[in-house]
Image (cartoon, rainbow, N blue to C red; front, side, top):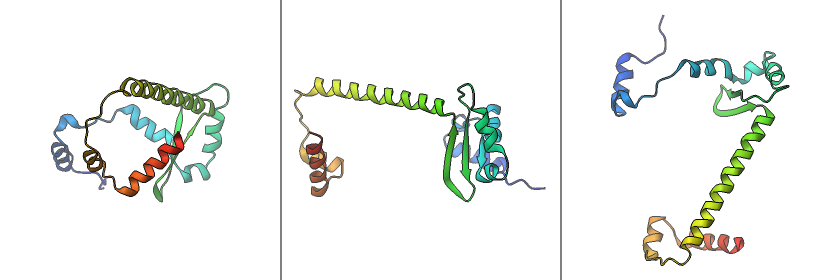
Length: 146
């Protein structure tokens, strides 16, 4: 019986090409357990009572257990099922991080507002790959924000 896995030559050869065996990420048993239990296909949910079981597991206490659902016919068709309260908590964390970043950026802008800019405009245009149309679009966005 042949498993569709890379040979040890492929495994070590690819590892060496990427910079050596030390650059490889080992797979731990807890990761394999997560893959086995928490990554489901659409068929797993539609042909069994698994979705009902998952939703039932979210009743009562808030849990951080998540499930990844993927479409076997479309590899980039993926979603996550998570406890609603846990998801809300994650959104609150994201909002706090966004606010902290905004606060820091505002403080940096205030600190630098009187600094002299000595970068030639031509250099900026070249480094950011800007053209006249893009510059006009950016200036319109800036005017709308003010």
